[in-house]
Image (cartoon, rainbow over all chains, first blue to last red):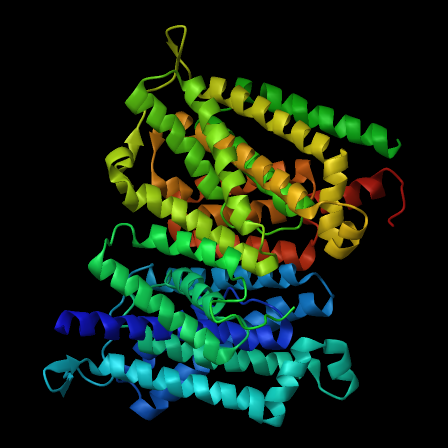
Length: 291
Length: 316
């Protein structure tokens, strides 16, 4: 029973991290129809910023946390303004912008890799190592922090997107750019905003997940793949469905690894994904997908 | 000089250069050339699916893995000649492409990109972790060197084999592109709705494209493992799929010669940078970014513009 709960909690935590990465995709996709391959790299920047500012102790922790939010924004802004935006302006096909974000991701990963020599690094646990005890079961503080903040971020983002003027403008920018600029929405600023929102989400995901995943300069690509899988599983473009998809994927992976066979997990996950993609391309929740 | 004469002149010089390269190549230039040509074949496969049909494929290394492991399996476990293993590897890769086309071709655009990524990763983890009794997992399978009439086949032999295969694949690409099927594929890339209304059977044509992609990449994988005498999952991982895809973009999607050139360039760079492994990722990012921002049609597009200018044809 305890083992079952342990697997359950770790599945939900890792799944929430993937869900959060998927949410970072969604933020940019909703505003510009671009899939950001750099989502994982933004998370990596968040993880390293955490190591640099929060755990090194060179600045007070609140200032450090600001750094954790600021650094991914810088990375996201660089990706957008140098790579994605020029191609959008040129009215190049969307696939070119998507590939441009891949180029940006490789550059960021390469630069950080050069600085760190592609070594793994160990971050601390921000809330300490003492677990929270609930009766017979104890749960790690890091996992609790991840789950709480992920749910908070997802609802916050959902509220922002659907209930605020700015969020509706963001959606309009993605659904019909010409019409949106006709009614006075500044498209360039909207896309900037989308990248900033996405980078904040991605950066926090990376910062929280750094102790779970093995943080290194190459951690981005797997995060992108799993985050993307989770997003498609849930229903691409819908914040809460994306989060649900990520958590479902996390549970599936952890339970399969724990109870059936760790060696065949990846193979079966990807095989299952292929089949699900083919028969439920709108996600297992069956929401209508954006064109 | 008109454009056509200029083209023939240019191609003959390149072909002549490629034919006599082994005569004066020193050091590991031959090694790089063979790997480059194999990369060119792999890129030609992706070019049919991405360049002609406009569909993203991030799983090309999966097809290469099937070709490669088929060669390894038939040689190690069944002791058949290399050529049989190679042919069966190509066929198996094509059949797998046919099989996955049933699932994957329901998807489009970026979701298809994800689907093909999943395919590549599934194949990779199948060989790396899943069925280690046959594949020896990450350790890989060593193969015997290829002997022809009792003489060990060297770099030069593989170079000419790879060169012939590359030219053959370029010819196949051209033949496909200039056929009814190829025109249908390009119509799909332009606009699926319009293509359907003109009577193009989209699913059928995309299936053909994916199977051709599988056949060509299976060939590339089969050649690669025998040339290296070693078959390990490290050659068929996701970064390699992305490398092949980048190669097509760099060379010029939609142009067979461009894709082959892109494959040769990217795989050569990949090998040259091996001692400087730290710079790999950065170099790919800079190359891909520069091409996308400054040369949207890839090297082939750039050469086309230049040759038009030199031969006196005004730019469109």
